[in-house]
Image 1 (cartoon, rainbow, N blue to C red):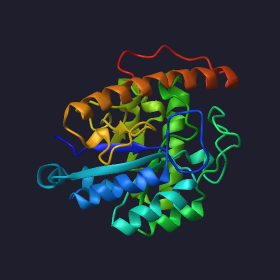
Image 2: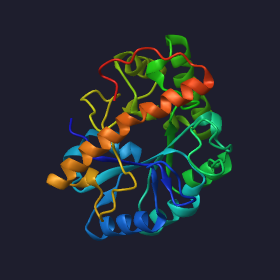
Image 3: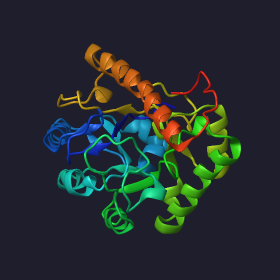
Image 4: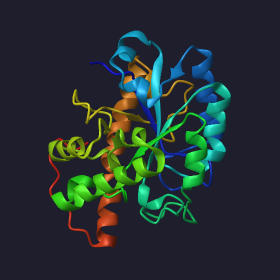
Length: 266
């Protein structure tokens, strides 16, 4: 089935960084306001998963955030609530309420993640939360046991804290997934899985288009069907592939020996 488009943001507002994932609050607010004014609306994760939605809900999209930074509660969620929009945030469950020591140090100070209290508050207001793994390790570089631990422990904690709906979906860290990972994700209990721009027809390997710092138009590339949108998705795919450099640096720091990635990794 053809699913509605999916956008992926990371950080909204907060301190500047050396990387490309931060989108300014004013840019984000302008984009969401423009989309609302032109008839777009966001889908809940449950709506997105419903086969009827894809056929009967034009100009809809799934809005997602990766990592679960605390700045979302200040700079993103209030903007969305004002517009009547919703979003799904994929949480790194080991780091809820902690700082982003899992990542390369792109900012002067380490960045805080949402706390469980904040997550529960916004869930009560109609926002959804799901898995981004337990510790943001690149799953395709892990052996079977470590990979399954990342998938299962994250889902178990989310369902215990937030209910079964929170265990419905996973966004793979770095968008890195292959057949082995998707198979185990399904076995663990996930119904939906999201990778990078070049997804497949497998519901555990659906496409998402990241919104990076250069995506400044009122309509992000992932919602455009013209040549600029197609070009923007290509650039986003290349940028996502370059994230392997981050994985290498993290692996060196954490002394993780990477496994060879399959050609299907995105």
